[in-house]
Length: 415
Image (cartoon, rainbow, N blue to C red; front, side):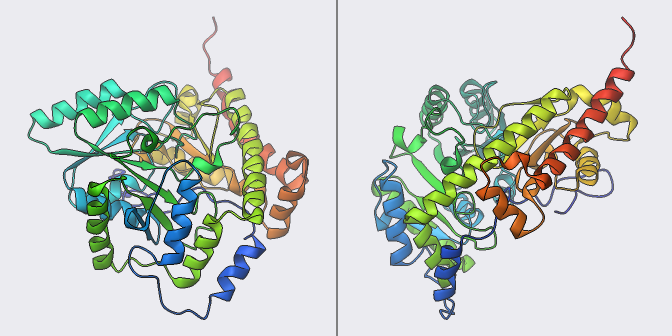
């Protein structure tokens, strides 16, 4: 992960990748990839028939009807968002904070990105009133609002937006004529799926929403890039898909055949895939809950993680001891925690948050072990938090935050 401009902590140029699974590759998925390894070519831009069939079936099982002329694939969600932004044009609105890769894709095309505050109860979805105010201000200043990107199961905050918030925000966006891109990479990693209601904006307004899913979220290793998009279920969606395919063709953004075979297999959700996903989600949920307890106990602030393999922590209450360590902004905080934790701790500025805010995203993958054997042991264990290597990792993390809490208490003025 590249840092910001070394002189003056200038604009972030490179964001961190998606939180890693930290787990061995599923053997049957590896076998599918190996069986297609003699295919040296790639799927056509937008995906081949087998991958598109699998994507259509995947969304149909989630209540979103899909057909080949309204589905596309690419080597990763960034390529799809870049193509969508190029096809739709205009200014783009995103929540603050948001996934690290969203804004760079837009800026690469010379478009303006406007960050909008999120409601108190969740991240990933802009506050509807703040969105209306921002859109109208941009339009009054001569801007061209066209696109809203949001995420109901969010990176970096690991929250799931309540359906009522999604309703209000989507209605506000549609009322202002914005096309909505819903990044649903993490929808299949909800920690308590029976207790958490996840509403896709495409269920509300099927004619106004494009859905993206990067398969590195639920199914594939990060090194096997593949993502799929579902376009609006109407003639406009067919036309938008055609424009996106034009851009993907220019970019030569094609999914390699072996990866496409693995992606199609995973999207088919056979028993082995769903069992691994269920087990992995349960494991990461347990570790995320333990990390949440540690950071809250030390006096930091974090919403309880509800999805994904990460959580978002605000260390503002620990500013005084961090100042004593020379931490003056989010980049300093990233460097400080990365060194002490021995794992990536990207600062909130990489997700569009203020550089001055003391916020970081912490992933759970690095806490599962240093070898495939240790990580596999986590998957198989009924009590993974009691494994020695997980205990050591959590103890180290807890001690770093406890030391900051103790320093803060020592420096509190007497009452």
